[in-house]
Length: 207
Image 1 (spheres, helix red, strand yellow):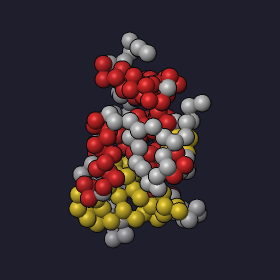
Image 2 (cartoon, helix red, strand yellow):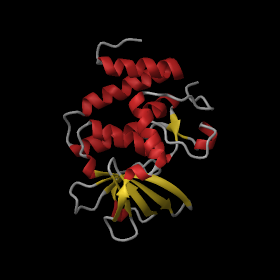
Image 3 (cartoon, rainbow, N blue to C red):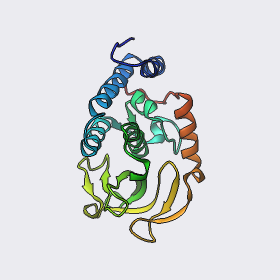
Image 4 (cartoon, rainbow, N blue to C red):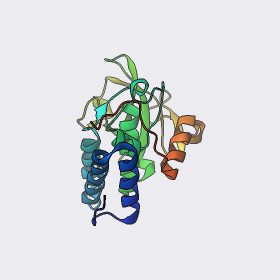
C-alpha cells in the first residue's frame, strides 16, 4: 500500500498498521494523515475541532472487551488500527495529534474526571488558550467542544501532560503534584508510541 501524498515516516505507519490490523485500518491511517495535513496551517480553534471530530468517529469499546485487560492505554496508531477504544484512547490520540499540529504541550492536559451522570471515571482533553483561561473540553461522550464551566457533569480529579501532573481538587488550575512520569501507564504508552510497537486487540472492529 503506497500513497505519494505520504512522507516516508507516514508510509511506514500505514504499512505497519496494515500488517497488524488489515487494509481498511491502513486506509484509516491514510485518512488521518490527510486530515492532519489539511489542518496544519489552520487556526488552533480549527485544529481542536478537526481533531476532535475525526477521532470521535471511532467506536467506543471498554479495554476488557477490546484488549482483555482491565486498563490499557493505546497509542494513536493502535486506536486507529483497532477502530475502537475507550475514553483514554480518544483523549490520548487527540493529545498527540494536536502536539504534532504545533499546539504547545503547555496548553494541553489529559484530565481524569468522574462523569457524574454516568457514575464512572472518564478522561477528557483540556485546552487552555492561556494559562489563566478557562479550558475548553474535547470529549467523546459530548462531542461539542465547550468551556469547562459548562461541563458540570464532569468532576476533575487529576490532570497531566508530557511533563507535569496536577491534582485538580485544590484549585481551578490544579495543584502541581510532580512529574507525569509517575504514571506507569503513561510511561508504557509513550515507550510503545516511540518504538512503533503495535499490539493486536482481542476484538476486530475492521470487519
